[in-house]
Image (cartoon, rainbow, N blue to C red; front, side, top):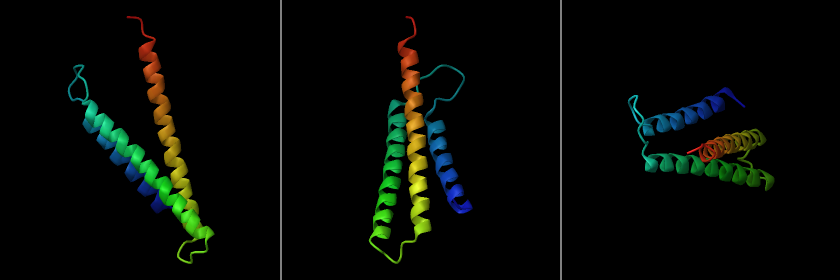
Length: 108
C-alpha cells in the first residue's frame, strides 16, 4: 500500500471520527446523543464500505477481462482497501454488540 493510499484511508477515518464526535452531546452532564445523527453516521459508514467493495469488485472484473487501463497494482490496492474497511466495520459491529449485551446484563 502506498503512502498516498494510507494517507487517504487515514483521512477518511478522521472524517468519520469527526462526524461521530460532532454527534456526541457536549458538556459534562449525561445527555442523550441525537439518535438520528448516529443512525445517519452509521449508515454513511456502511454505504462507504459497500461502495469500496463494489469499486474493488468492478476493478477486479475489468482486470480479469483484460482492460488495458486497469493495472494489477491498482486492483490489489483497491481490494486491500475494501478488505480493511470491511474488517474495521466488523470490529465496530462487534463492539456495538458487546456494549448492547453488557447493557442488557446490567441489574435493574
